[in-house]
Each structure stands twice: as structure tokens, then as C-alpha cells.
Length: 231
Image (cartoon, rainbow, N blue to C red; front, side, top):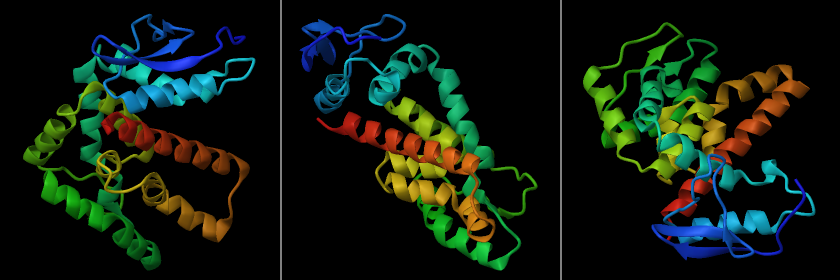
């Protein structure tokens, strides 16, 4: 799409802040008003639009896309989204450890256990196992994580959903969204097993592209959540 505006700015509106293209408020793909509660987030979204060249590139509007997802999808099927995110506590990545080799098992413990301990103290303990055979988490623990997820507003839920599905771990996603760890630490923890294999066997082009996409999505989720928390 050819650029059709000169200036993109953040502006105050009913319910919060929006982005104005030559004074006209933008809308989501579903034609809903794009309104956020954080002026900082609105300014960042406006900056995405202002940075566009002669041709508008949707891939260069990630904050806009995630805000639209929160409004068009999360808000409309909130209970389903909460359930999708909370389900990751049943098979969380950090609860499944390697038996062998011992070096990998040690790395997993070092990278994951502190986050699991934090989540256990903050929400509820989760059981850990060695191997890939599924384990059953305590119903009360799963209920606690579902309550924690459900407590977030729609914008944060959009970021949490992206982080959880990308990382394969609700524990790591919660730590990321709450600012306990940064995007790079979350990426390193989630990709630990792959990184271990790459050290030994190398990395192919497909794996490099996948890891780059994971890193990008994790960074987006963290940035969006931080901007939304800001004033």
C-alpha cells in the first residue's frame, strides 16, 4: 500500500490514546477504534507509522498489529485466550528435564530452576520430571495459573499469548511479561536445548530462520508489555 499520510502522531481520545494519521484516528483490521490506555504505547505505535517509507509495510508495524490483535481477537474471545495460555502450565517446557547427557541436564537446571522457583512462590509449585513422559500437575496449581492469566487486561493478554506460544513456557512468559527477565534471557532459556544441539552439530538455514523469528516475537511481546505498563 502506498503511503497516504504525512504525519503520524499520538492523540488523546475517549478511553485513552490513539494514533492519528494527518489528524484521522486509525482503526484495527476489524474496523474498531485503535485505543490504548498508555500514551507511551500510542507514541510508539505512531512512531512505527511515521517511520514508513513511500510504501507501507505491515511487517514493520508489529506494535500496531499486536494492539489490533488485543482489540479484535483477545477482547472478543477472552475466555478462550485465557484457557489457551493457561493450558501451557500442564506441559510447561521448564518442567521437563533431560536424563542425558548430564551436561544438558545441568544447563537446564541452571537456566530454568530459578524461574520455576519464582513461579512456585508467586503462583503455585509445578512438578518436574526427567524425560518426555507427561506428568499430571496438581489441579489447584493449574487453577492458580489460570487465575493469574485471567487477571491481566486484554493488551497484556495479547503480549502474554504471543510470549507463551513462542517460548513454549507459561513460566518463562510470565517472568518476561512481568519484567523479571528480559527478552534475550527468555529466548536463551527457551532455546537452551536447541542451542545445545547446535554447539554439537551446527545450525542449518531453516533453524537459523526459525530462531530469528522466535527472538523477534519474544522481543515484541516484552516491548509491547513494557510500553503498555508505562504511563
